Length: 160
Image (cartoon, rainbow, N blue to C red):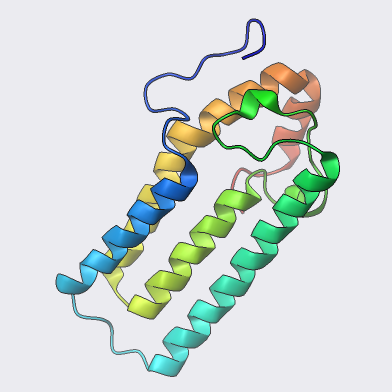
């Protein structure tokens, strides 16, 4: 970390979001054994899942493209190595489009499962990311980019 940079504590930045979303998805799949699906036609469930997957693609690809063009890191475990603050494009809608894309993936899975218990895992996933991933990233970005980042935080929501 750069000199005087805030240090992550506890579980912060320890488990990459890809692993966290995988665990959430496995838990969601496990709910099938506990709860029967809602009586929603298969076409509606699949249609909703497709819409959420398209949204996930738009947010995820848009975010990665902006990071690539800015030549900055997309590593979720090393936010202190960011070399640019990206605030345009999809980043003008949310400060965390990559994590929003993961939420859309989980919503697609929940749509396919049509299971209310599976839906409850999504807010838990978001709370975990907010506390153990995003909070540490925000401290690192505030340290690196100061007032520019604080102004961005005031005008752009964490989640959509």
